[in-house]
Length: 334
Image 1 (cartoon, rainbow, N blue to C red):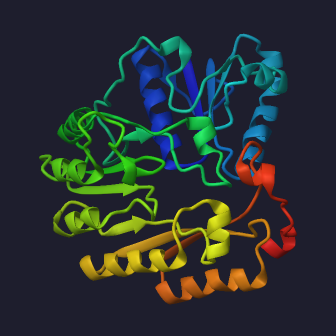
Image 2: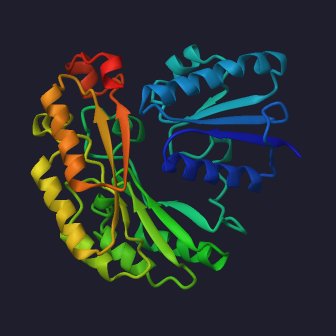
């Protein structure tokens, strides 16, 4: 039996897509292996949202050069957000890679195989409900690599979750770059609220989560519905990124620190015992000590359960990389 090896870095969406690719491999007659030496096909699912992640992908590809040289029949494939439309440049940069395909796509040699449903899924599973993003935050490469927002039909998602629950899954996490805008591109105009209401009635399912949220798109209608849905977990990640209005404007986030505070206040008033996490970028181009203190003060005031902090790193092709100078020293960011 031929063997496959999948290496994944990055967000939950990448993990879900790697699980889907692994299921496709197995449906095609491949077996899994934990070592690249045993693998006939090696697939890397990449992330370039931050420099550290991109460096790990590049180092992993470098590690595979000798293996490919000594075993030229091994197939190496690369997907995820490092893959853009210019595959000619990628092939020149990574000559040991045989296949490149964009994030969210199936491997090109398995495109005819239907998407499989695991016979015995994990207790907790990821289910992508949409791809892409329309927000174009100035620091973010995702819209350029995953494209514009594309929602899956609500009936298709409900059917998939029902089948997963029938096979033993108890918890589902709905995934999207911005789940709060789910459905606006579909003819029926469903939204995240209606999807959650449908999934709340799925027999055998115990818990529902969703991410990632965008503060400008998280509606009171959604929050009010969640307050009454017993299977939706009272735990949300709502990235603020900065507490300074000037920095939020430079980031193209589409809200102010005041409107963010109002959103968090409304959530806490409607959903008792809610657990909240957020994301912060420090050292955005031009950020002053005073603006950093505004972010620090917002965190002190709102008292999140978890804060994910990242130092700004320019992503080639984004507005911030084109128009702003990365003028904060790395030591200061850290």
